[in-house]
Amino acid sequence: MLKSLLATAVFAFVAASAAAAETPASAEDCLKAAFDIAQAAENKNLPSDELDKVEEMLMKMENLCDARQFNEAAAVATDLKTMISKE
Image (cartoon, rainbow, N blue to C red; front, top):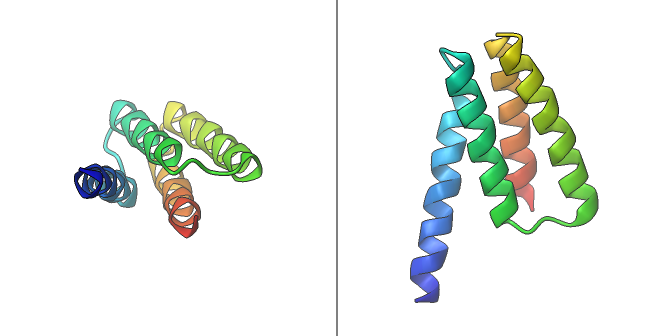
């Protein structure tokens, strides 16, 4: 059962990573990628200081999505994915 739960969590993280690696085509896609990354970070149970950094970067990404700066948002998503995967 634990292996199944772990496999599900890994799959969700990989899916979020794949979404973050691509430049979103719309603000909706961009915000969905941010949400997926936030879910992956939540599943990792990061320490408070790391979680604060992730939240700050997610806010930046969401602002970039709202401003339709999708390439910049994708770059932040890649940085987030790297940060989360380190933990």
